[in-house]
Image (cartoon, rainbow, N blue to C red; front, side, top):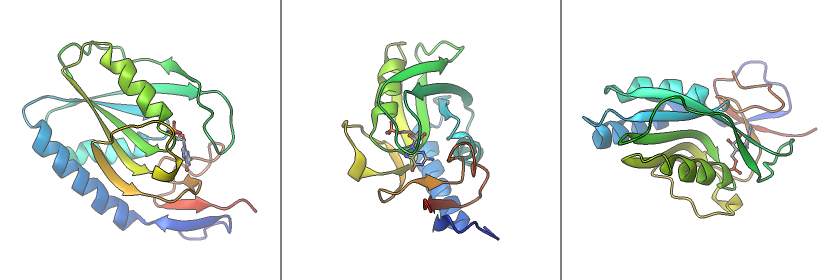
Length: 177
Ligand code: 5GP
């Protein structure tokens, strides 16, 4: 990004993001062709990634969103999760692909995958653009993973810090000054 504030350090630039999205979309297209999958984005962070991903997948599919909340604020998620906005379609017999921007402790995606599995889908798989394996507290399988990232607080490409920086085209490390 031009004129980056000094608190931002480039970590994954837009070219690398685009190549990663393309690779993930090819894998997903291969596995889901003919299955009419439902992509479920986790708001708000996944909205940019999901928009790029579903356009690159190029097979018939649907898109919906959930919004989850964990208690607490700041730069760490706190573990207790509630559903703030639920899906308004049936999942019965559907192939569901959860789309997330980052898996950190794994609590959010683990909660959501278990929650969705109770709604009788044919399958539930997880796609995440990034993962911080060093932070994991629950064992969660990421079926389609873009990039492993270090234990830093990231912003951009949908990821925020107090609602700022979601619209950065690159992913940057947020350095507290
Ligand atoms: P988890 O439940 O896996 O610990 O965390 C998942 C959620 O925490 C993500 O959806 C995201 O909202 C938030 N999160 C985790 N790491 C980061 C990060 O580095 N930057 C930002 N902006 N959010 C993060």
